[in-house]
Length: 245
Ligand SMILES: Cc1cc2nc3c(=O)[nH]c(=O)nc-3n(C[C@H](O)[C@H](O)[C@H](O)COP(=O)(O)OP(=O)(O)OC[C@H]3O[C@@H](n4cnc5c(N)ncnc54)[C@H](O)[C@@H]3O)c2cc1C
Image (cartoon, rainbow, N blue to C red; front, side):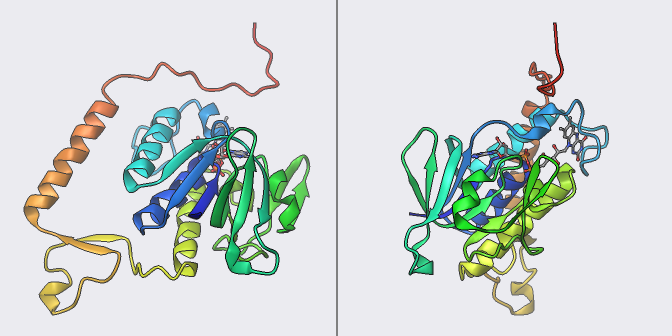
């Protein structure tokens, strides 16, 4: 039984997983295809990349970050989600996928823009606009069903990467809160920031000394130098209805 299963390893789902895995929740991400962002030709409005970034590279790096945080991944399309026991809200959920074994999780986050059919048995409340379905959720992503959350575009958030990532993070924090995990802030502070004022380092926070800070910076710079050393070969995915020779 996983603490959390995130359905959809695109922008929002990956952001959720970074927060929940860092908080120590056993987090599984199931992804059945590719993020819609793989269709982008140059991602130029995501803060932190002054001249933009290859969207596929961005996705690779976020996936790596989620893995580093402790999230695990499974390939497959989720086809149904049901309560394990209708009489016990704590019993969690059982998920079926189109390939692998059934999966059980205490909580689930639907971050699967373009598909939420698997939620129909749970009756979370969906609205339809044109051919698209959106899952009804409060601003932290909580749906009408306890333990079921929605993140990113699927939750009706604006269709931008930074917004989907931010919403995914917010949903992750809601999951952490609802799991009674003692994780005040996910912060790394310089040595003495709390203890220098006679305070304990709050749960979820870390104080690091200057040597450790320099080591982490060196590691981070090396990884980014390697990651950006060569252009990616992958082409943007074209819209399926565009005919090509
Ligand atoms: C052509 C194009 C260009 C764009 N350019 C920009 C841009 O320049 N700047 C910008 O900010 N935004 C851009 N966007 C928008 C951006 O890509 C989206 O807003 C963002 O990806 C939404 O994130 P999400 O996590 O909600 O969905 P996604 O990133 O699409 O993630 C959803 C994930 O769920 C998976 N999934 C779906 N169904 C299932 C299932 N049943 N089981 C398991 N997994 C499932 C999918 O495989 C996917 O990986 C662009 C979009 C397009 C189409």
